[in-house]
Amino acid sequence: MNILVTLDSNYIYPLCVMFNSLAKTNSGRDFDIYVAYSSLTDEDFEKMEKALVGVNAVIHKVPVDNEIFAGAPVLDRLSKETYYRLLIGDILPADVYKVLYLDPDIVINRDLSELYATDMTGYAVAGGKHMFGFFENINLWRLKMDSDCNYVNAGVLLINLDEWRKTVTLQQILDYITANIKSLLLADQDVINHIFQHSTLYIDERLYNLDEKTFRRYSSRRAGKKRIDLDWVRKNTAVIHFNGKHKPWREGNDYQGKLGEFFEKNKDI
Image 1 (cartoon, helix red, strand yellow):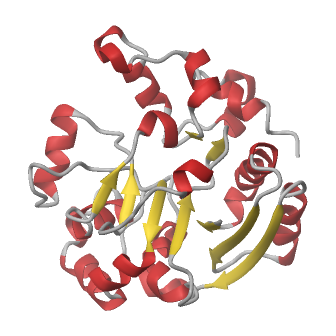
Image 2 (image 1 turned 45 degrees about the vertical axis):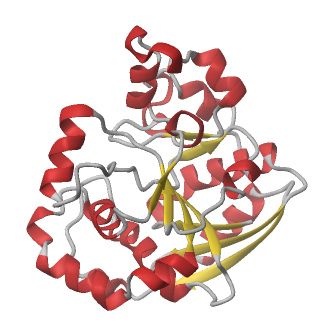
Image 3 (image 1 turned 90 degrees about the vertical axis):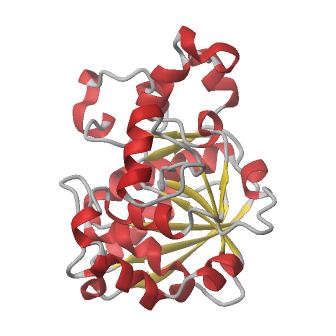
């Protein structure tokens, strides 16, 4: 299984927690993990190696020139390294045809093989929604996306590299950022949603990209047949995502979210 992560040193600890959870839930599997970075140290990579005890994992260092996205807008909680996933068509080996991109602020709760085996024929990316109703419509309008498309969260993306490379070049991505720099309110996530709006496969965010906001939505009565609770999450959800400004590793016992237990049981690395 191929996995891509992008980060700076500020996210080494949560990444190692994610790797620890991956080792616990996917023991016996083989992983090629590509780490795209511009400022990590040898010590950072040593920490990653220690966190992956229990799985057959090879870490591939992928250094990136940080000036590539020098003019791209970023959010307070996002570093420039988040844009490195846009380089995926160029920085990964040509014989890598599928990769699972994961943000470092994630915990793996179940085996990932079913997600990774998803048929991606005709699709460049697969992702889950985190926006609904009015807020999704605003994003579709803002990015000039068709109304029958969904805006997906880019923190968990299964990527068909053959389709990605056929759909867009790096220069086209850079040109799009330059031409739309003022409208990219959610950084490279906006870029991915616009460019791949017609080649995105939608996956169940309850299973593969569950954050606190999405949990609140699906744990309410209005969710109907899709309603879930914490016990359902423990048994079924593969990927827990601690996106947004509130992070369990920063707030300790004061973390207010319902999903904090999944970080707590994996934090000792």
